[in-house]
Length: 226
Image 1: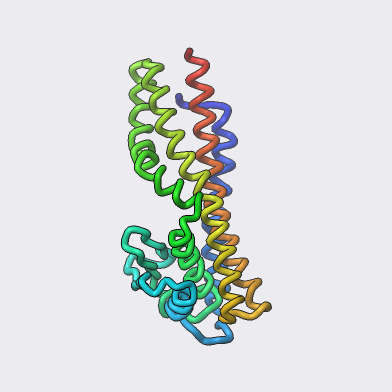
Image 2: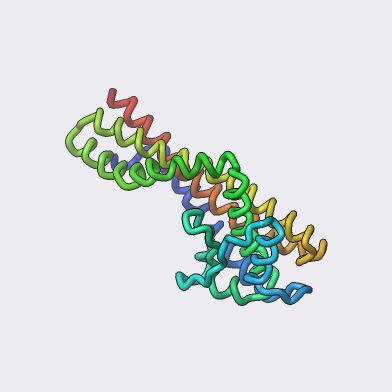
C-alpha cells in the first residue's frame, strides 16, 4: 500500500501534468499579449459563432470564478467566460471563447461522445468520491472484495476521463474551423489559436494517463491479494 512499482510511472505522469499546466498558463499569457486583427472580444466572438450556428438561445455570462474557469454549462445552455476571455480581444481570449462555443455546438448536435460523457458523469462522480475510501478501508481491514468494489467505481471515473479526450479535441477543432469560416481570425493567427488549445488539451491527456496508471496499479494489487 505504501509503495508499488507502478508509482514510478505515476510520478512521471504527475510531472507531465504539472508541466502541462505550466504550458497552458505560459501559452495563454504569451498569446494574451497578441491582439486579434478584428479587435473583437471573446464574448463578441462567442456570440457571433453561436448566432451563426442558430444557437441564439445559448447565453453568454461573465464568470467570477477566476482566470481559466471558462466552461459551457449544458443544463443552463450557457457559455461562461472568465474576465480575461470575456473582455479580452487577444488571440488567447478568442481561442478559449470559441472552444467553449464548440461544446455548445456539440451539445446542440448531440455529439455522441459528449452524450456518453453526460451519462457517465453521475457514476464517475460517485466513483471519484467513494473509491479512495473503499481502497483505504479494504487495505486497512484486509478486505479484498472492498478493494474490488473501489476498483469498479474508480473505473467509471477513469472511463469518464478517457471519453473527455475526444470531446475536448473535437471542441477545439470546431473552434478553429468556425473561427476561420466566420473570418474572426486570419490564417496567420490560426497558429496562435492552435498553440493555446493544444496546450489545454495536453492537460487532459496527462491527467487521464495518470488516472489510468493508478487504476492499473490497484488492479495489480487486487490480483496479487487474490
